[in-house]
Length: 292
Image (tube, rainbow, N blue to C red; front, side, top):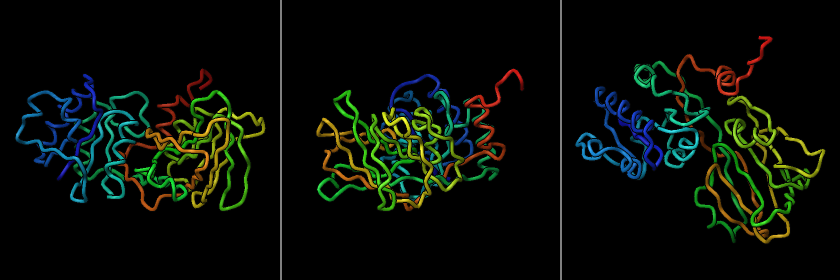
């Protein structure tokens, strides 16, 4: 098996502990192990100088698996390497909450044994794809997001107006600090913090969630995932910010942003005893009530 390992590009004790356990297991299984070129620099000399470890800068379809070591943010960055290659991703959690990175450090050997034995399932996650009017095409290099695409104000405390069309039909103009378009995967992230709904990963929907709206009637809206969303920003400043997961670009107010469902999915590896509902109870403490 050809395995890629990606992680945070800074030294963290828990990450190094996880990587050592992970590497020991993979070499025991005679896997071909490739570390991302920046990530390996955060590891000890023994790993950096090991003849059994190779390095990658880009991925191709010859890889069987990518293992992300970190939190959910690390997986979002790993997605930019996987892109549309169809390489399954496993998340080992050395971060905090971990909706995507669900394997804990103490469970690495047990979880990977199950995965190598084929005892796992694959959750296919929808992504968002963004395009802009022709004069701004070169601004957005990696034009997709697994969690969300958000438009927000820049260099001002004043609100912006986000004129929103769905499949060419005018919806509304949000007066707010910004607007989030979230996938089901991203519904437990930024959108949730702004009052958006939790969406099951296999639901065929996206969510529009305003950020601190001044329109008191503005509420999150669930839309079918085959909807084309067109957004145009106006405000006191000439520019605004667009974030694609953790990547941020600056755009001018003359930019029209068009968002639709991407034509590929990300494959997340999950253990057979993992369910989304169990994750909600565990991570968001649903049901943690004295009456229960």
